[in-house]
Length: 440
Image (cartoon, rainbow, N blue to C red; front, side, top):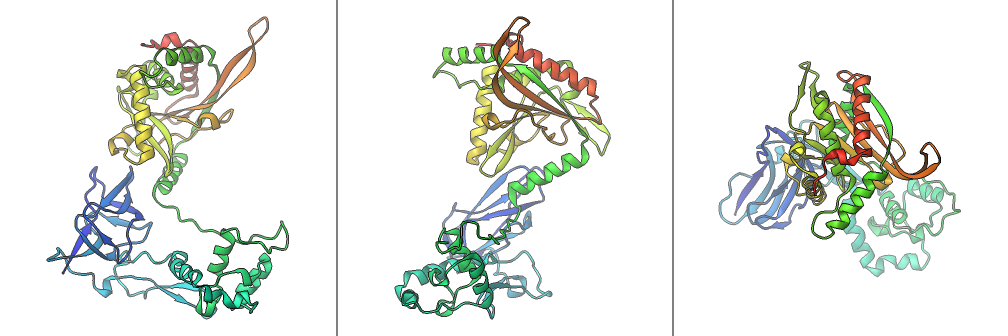
């Protein structure tokens, strides 16, 4: 038998480290070649790490949220025959040991300060998950509940009893996972989360739960990006209402004409064409500002970022060279990238290189928003909710499909006048869609 070490691979793009966001294996698991063992997050996207051998997992190189350098040990697997490494020694392992304190509550012991290799820890610090198997075994044995059925007083620490009393919980209804069925705080948590609070004193009993959620992976990247943008960029936001009646009629007619033969048109490809035409006249809006070097890079290519909501958070996919594509080409590309972002197959190159961004909340949108610029870009266009409203045409009120656009600009490099000109150009193009040179 030998030990095979899988190290964090070189992901490219000059990336030196990645954040560990998911383990798909545990110690003792048997894995096969190409099985997914972990997911790491770079500044651009999530990357799957597969196993390159068959064997049994003997060591895990980090906790969720740890940053691991490229080339650093990620996981060790015991294999038949010779491996490629030696086992991690005890003084390299920073394992946490799950213990039970004098009150019967599960705690995690901390390694000594002189332990080295701080990232080489097994993912057993989640005391709740460490208790799951014990709890299921307890529930699977009816004998463990016999004393409860007969009305015997359950074992529990004073702090557990006090909390149960405050929450209005009868401890005889709570399955304890400690010695002799002892009830812990973790057992109370499970009882509450499973909806088992049938003996509460009233509908307005106090809820004293505090849930700590570690900010990792995509959520952390989004947080860092938003903080950077707001701390560095003085935003100016302009909101303008647009009569979308004519464009919506055109969009419906085109979708009807090409029903089933072409991708369905949404508002996005029309907005993309409007942006392409607008920045043709104002190239300073299709730019990135290197604020450290004091240089604004204006781009000939219009690479439009589309903010896409996924299960893992917000991704900004990028349609490259929108200026060289027609309405249908852009519609197909937007659909393709959105699907790839949601199913986790998006490529790194489809998340980089944006020069201006569109953001939209779709049907959930509000009347107006204040979009945050995707640093280091200098402008973002926000699409808000469309509503039918009565509008005065000079003689009478007419029902019109109205929508507000919210556009934010980097006020360090974009003056208010230039921002207003850009917004009015977008408005005029959307209100007169023939000006967009629609093909098809």
